[in-house]
Amino acid sequence: MNKKILARASVALSTMLASVGAMANTTGTVDPTFQNFRDTVVGWAKGPLGTGLAITMMLMGAGMGVAKNSPMPALSGVAGAAFLNWGPGIITQLTEGALI
Image (tube, rainbow, N blue to C red; front, side, top):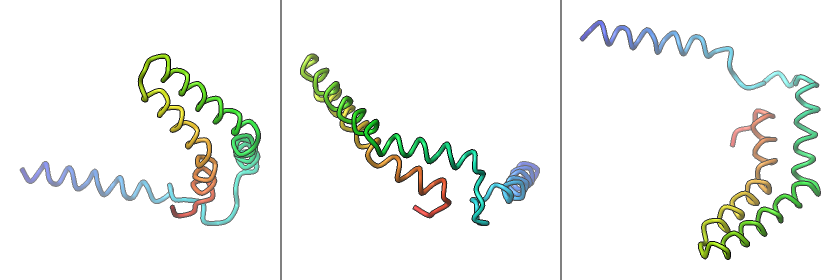
């Protein structure tokens, strides 16, 4: 019994020590390659492409819901459109190291 507790404690301790380097970016420097990619994707999602995809998702979900006589496809379309609406803001906060 004590060997199991000791093994689990050592695994937990080594995991905590190994995760010290995996902290959020606090120095204010960001890799420009990733920053450019992130800005491009967020721009697409917030711009006309994101709006068009959100509208298409809602319309396709509504059409599938009418065809199947079920509200679930329509709700899936609304959920996808909501993700496209709030997703870029969440991604921006996560990649900038902000607390949510």
